[in-house]
Length: 461
Image (cartoon, rainbow, N blue to C red; front, side, top):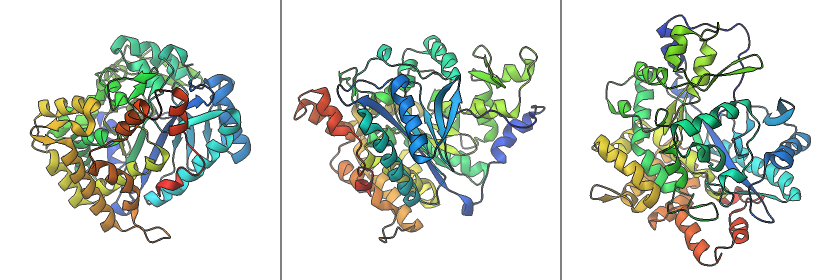
């Protein structure tokens, strides 16, 4: 989840509908200015027993260590260090202490790779002496929900109780899951809607390719992407696939209408956070609340609290991918860049899924959480579609031809994924195989087998 940044300067009141739609219009960027950003979430455990590291005397100590040793600027809330700010990047926390690098906006995945490699070096340097390991998994594997301390952010004090009213798995999403999210630009309303439509269409394929959360609460959970399944019972008003994006005439106003009718979480005025969960944004805009009127900053903040599989803000955010082992993490931005930053590849990706009905899309969305690449879309196994999608992404990266010092284009980050998809396997298949086999269902072997090391990110390049 994005770190909330308080509004600076004079608040801009929302006086017209055009201001809401205008936020998206003003975010359009010419093709020459397109960049890519990646957000990496990671669960942390004690090396000695595999249990989740609490915020107090654990994650907060890591944040302070990163600030002291590597020059990050602490962000303090109610006397606690809850995030870090750097030059072009930030380190934030999910509600259960999952550590997230919100990376710099980069020209290529090669720039992302350098950033991620340095991030891994820094967190391992600080965490290893503390007896803390970060794991390349999409779920906290051992600790149960009640055993995980809430990070003391005021927004989580509002969101946590609300989750119990709108679904059964929302607090699991908040405290146990981890993902890798990829942010891309758009140059027009048509381009943004095309990318949203394609993203929603291929979201189940991305989930299947990167499924990596088969263990939770200490054992196998029956899913290959349990993280993905959790989102299906978090909050139906703000999560999942959006049917309206598959309408060819869909535009910014359609997304605006959707966002207006989703319940809010909060508004922030100075140091005061007000619970707004009883209000949709439309109601708040029309009626106000306790003398407060809706501002553009409120609208932008509200957009960050919507959680569809692909999300529209000042950019488009891909949200369907489980957090990965460090050597596979860069495959996520590479895949998205290859598909979405080449017009022919974007169309080819759509051609794979365009004939599905809404009901078929929903069925596949749910099926891949359990079966990943073995799920079927009609008579076609997802493995076949995933292989085609991977080849399309590779061709896009080859045509974009951004190379590193060794002369490799960005398709080099997809090599491990290509090997796995070619064998019909996702990361979860390997985890399950080892859990039942050489790890003998022993938690500490799981920790050792999935823990980050200083050179683990570089091994994926």
